[in-house]
Amino acid sequence: MRIIKTLLCFSFVLSVFGQVLAQEKLEKRIHIGLFVPLFLDSAFDNTNNYTYGKLFPKQSISGLEFYLGVEAALDTLAAQGTAITLHVYDVKSKTENIQSVATTGIFDSLDLIMGPVTGVDFLQLTQIANQKNIPFVSALYPNDGGIRKTPNLIIVNAKLNTHIQASFNYVMRNFVGYNTISLRRKNPADDRVADVIKSFNVTPSGQLLHIKTVLVDDLFSIDSLTTNLDSLRKNVLMVGSVDETFGLSMVTMASLVSKNYPLTVVGMPTWGNIKELSKTEFYNFPIIYSTSFFNDLSNPWSANFDEHYRNKAFSKPTDMVYRGYELVWTFANLLKKYGKTELLKNLSDKSFKLMSDFDFKPINFSKFNTAPDYYENKKVYLLRRENGTINKIN
Image (cartoon, rainbow, N blue to C red):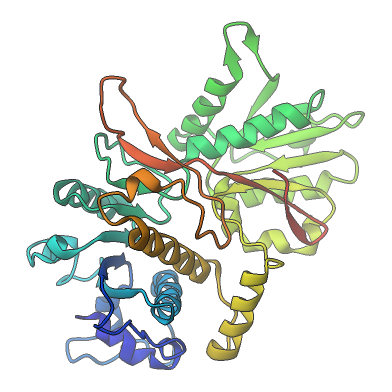
């Protein structure tokens, strides 16, 4: 497989854990298909020479980090007697993409499909999982792609609607009497977020919250913002956009007026990716956003893993490393305990929790369906960033 190129190129990293699979004498071997975007074709030329010199291809970082987490989990599982064969495929490869792999018959031998895939890759794996009756763990994509009647699909990262509902409910419970403002642009993506918020806010008896919507355009300024703020009471700015650049610009404006206007900013699940939020200029007011994954580094397991990883890899484990480890650990153990046919019936088993509290619920869009359309993790953590720390608030 072309994945061997990555193993050769980055052997100094991958040898940290070394995939020590359990011996053949063990009773049941689990086969997992990992589909991950590694972009190997762009990293190597036709003669298998690495094309980036001393640099590292940025587009490959996220996928490789997830893969490293998976490898670390396999090493632990093997040491505990769980026999696993991992089949790794680069979904961005011309020769080993999902369509090509499907012609090899490998799916017939898989017990589980997993991957941090999006878009077309997500839809293709969902279709194959449905045809072959294989559980498919969608690791990061907070979307169902409009699919229905795919009971083998497991969405780990809660959908956007679920995140928005959690944030809305928190505002409704904790910010009664605040001056509540929704900041958004006029475009289809922000219109969708606005529609979701409206669906939660409008009831037969009226609105639950009085939310003033402010449309932000290219002429929006500090004065435009302060015109809508109240200096005599507390303000809540709900940023109704998943666009990270727009979110950061609104937080930046808020920071410039926070001394004169007491305020809290409520953002989106994408804000966990905005590294700039850790800057000191944003320390003086709370920023709230949601996530499906919560890694409390005071947790003994997390602290031990962090230390072990740093000692072996000479770098800090990223969120993607943790997620790769947690998901393979969780679902490999569930497979071992219940088997492929009973896995979906036992997603509520929390025996193998490491960091995140997953709460998988069957989602059914029609009361006439006998099986769910898919399973979605409904657990959403709300995080509060303030004074240089991040704390869980629900």
